[in-house]
Length: 300
Picture (cartoon, helix red, strand yellow):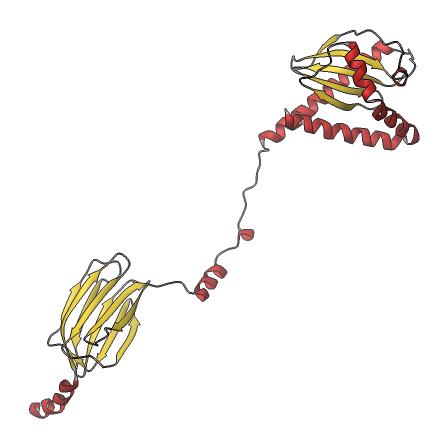
């Protein structure tokens, strides 16, 4: 019976290629198993995988005895080569993210089994993206603290309002019921003397009234000095910041008068608008003051 079986199997071995040797090459980006045959190998190669194992079946190939090799490679943990009846089975234990590429040499005397990392396909990327939460759905941390720059702007605005309020009160007390003619729009009119006053706000900063001109019974133009800055302010029914000076500040009453003469049209237009529509004047002057005060706070 055994002889009969050998007679039946013998033709298969005559047409099969014998595995002479195998070598394993562990690289940083792959692991290669090179198998050498005694004749050109033309058999069929079948591949399957199950439970972190890749199974390769080489039809029409045989090896004299089983071979087992364990490795410390990140691509290949162990490899087992086992002879079967009509084929040779190779079982490779690999990580889940490793796949196999098999290829023959040009003369078919060799077979290379290359183990490499799996690449993420476009479909897999779309699946991963669909499972990942979008940025819009991620919880955001509530910002409970205002930025320091915002505090600075608010502080400067409040300080400016306090200063203008105090100065306006002082000027109103000084003027009393006295009425003056609109001198600004006459070239050779007599100017008032420069009475410099010094005020102190709640934080101890000195605010000086360098120059002052009465435009009419309700409005006047004042040059305020605060720190190293000088501010040209229209005060009266509404307080408007006209300009700010840092370097070329007026030093005499004459310089102050020249500045006012240069702003003749600006002030005249303001009063014309105020006469036509008092409500519009109030809204525009308040908005203009807020914008200029905000610009000054950022520049400082």
